[in-house]
View 1 (cartoon, rainbow, N blue to C red):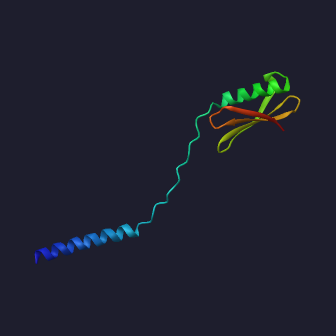
View 2 (cartoon, helix red, strand yellow):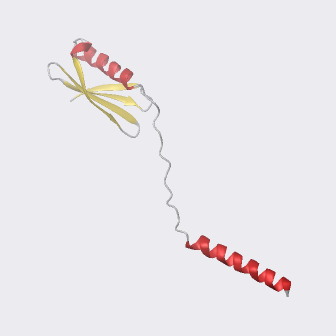
View 3 (spheres, rainbow, N blue to C red):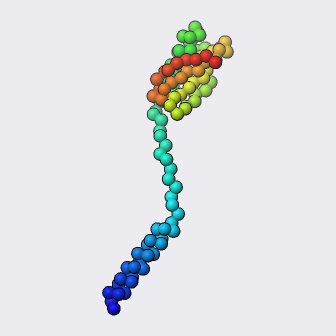
Length: 103
């Protein structure tokens, strides 16, 4: 009679464990967020100012940066000169200068 009680207890414990596992709410799975590489924002701004100063034939001090935006694989810096000439500097995801376009 003893082995029957022992088997019954094991079966009861296993059933309780399975029921507990099935009744637990599933944890939501989150996608891993890709962390963009650390970029020297100050260096990008300085490069943008230098490129714009060369394009518009003015001093770097006369260039103002308005906005810095990050996209999936690139960065854009918008700015203007003291003569209200707008421009956008584009950088790749590693912070390398790509091009300067006018607005």
